[in-house]
Image 1: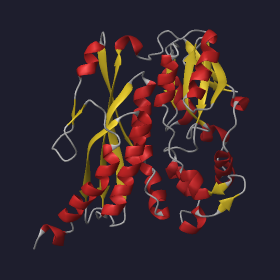
Image 2: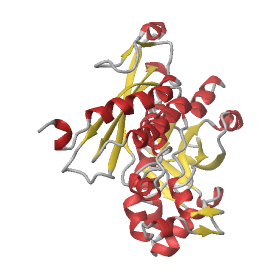
Image 3: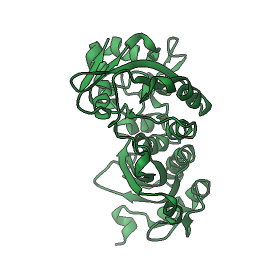
Length: 341
């Protein structure tokens, strides 16, 4: 009897590491100390000394049941972008710069080529957010998970000067809400998505004219990373007063998280185009509008609040980073919460 007989293939683990090294290398920052394969990832904090009052920010998350679609479609090179996005967008939302990321892959059986494809996506997400991929873990769970199944999660650490943190404390009546377009469903609400559509290869490969692509392509589109857009806004000299990453819980849960007591957000639903995937979801699932806005991002992945005088400069900075911005509402005095009209 040996470990391989019990279901854990150590040699496959070695091969996975070798295959993923080329992807990991691309994410290196000058602060990274050592290489892949150590017991921990080392990252120099020398540059942080330049800040007046450095604050570390952290985020951990996964892709939820979106990984099920990747498995059905046998497409594993973008799901890693989702894992990174869910963590670094939260850090950027607080005003931070992501520094490094670590991933955790749990699988029923280690197929080295598949694991390398997953990590390729993780590395791409790190490149999009200027974060270094300094470590990770691939764990085989024979008997706990089916051989073809896996789950993916991650952890990110970022930093910002305390004076640059986005807290919402200076929000005021009349501040303008600007939303940045999402790439689709992102990584939230897939338990509902999987109830609406048949989760078969045939169903996901079905082409929809209104989507301009197959259902699977629309649903598996990776989560947009907004790190560079928020950095571009900061570099333009604009102070973001408040920021909301529209994730699980949609508009009704996430927008109030950017507010302070005495402020109320008003979002105009017709101020931007809702992507067709959400209309298809609502129609085929017979989902009420409020539930849609309480579950999905509905086409806006990140919303910021700025002074009215900074609107044009903010939108130009977003566009310069490759994002598509829309003026979607405003802040008014009142009970903390959000109104969609």
